Image (cartoon, rainbow, N blue to C red):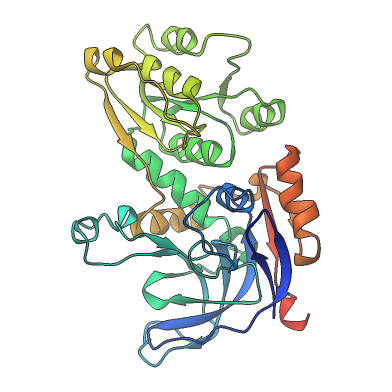
Length: 343
């Protein structure tokens, strides 16, 4: 079967790879759609030292089970599923606490093991979630990034009626904003990219362009001088982090999800003086996947506006990876793998 393989040294190739052999507790999945993630872009740019090429990319995928291992009883061939791609040890301190998303031996399908940009992928049965009948295969491929946003908002403790500042209107920032809005929060997004600004406005969010106005001043104006109840940092920049810390109200929460390229300086005085709570947010857990699926199934989140383009393996590099790299006006690009079985 064909697959998109990262071979190291900034190299992606379409190569023939064998169909995976499933173990007793695993299933084989015929992949339908797979999203291109910022992490895939980072790997392509040789930015993840832990990746051991060659590896098939892709961790945001939907598909249908074609084979189950002998120990699998909850799933059968024909079941449509999405996969929570975390591979964790189950025995470290984090796993024993139930916080397996920060497992000390954390691995991920599509990063540390072969992923879903191919016809078939294997996954542990315990990591599967059935796709409700009213969610399409295409939409289901967006469950993974939606779960990231769900987890970010969960980390913030945000409540209905509160105000949240989100720095960064990229895919994760927009998804987190959508989750917060669905909860009844008042959402402000800080963004400078014109395409993303329009996207955020079209989705009904309040947008602040830091190139045109001071983000912190605007948030304080909108909140009677208090600041946001919670801030979510999704840019990985020192500017975004500073705005979150300064723009959050006394006793508020700052959630960090964006990863900076270098160690940032932090205004510790603001954190101490306002007794801010600072939380990291790493991927998701099963409850976040479950909520993401409920949001879609109940019609409370529609991924359609976020899906900018569908490509195939034949043009995934030129019209997918290179397009994102150029900064083309896209939010999420999906790879259609539904015909790969016949390639």
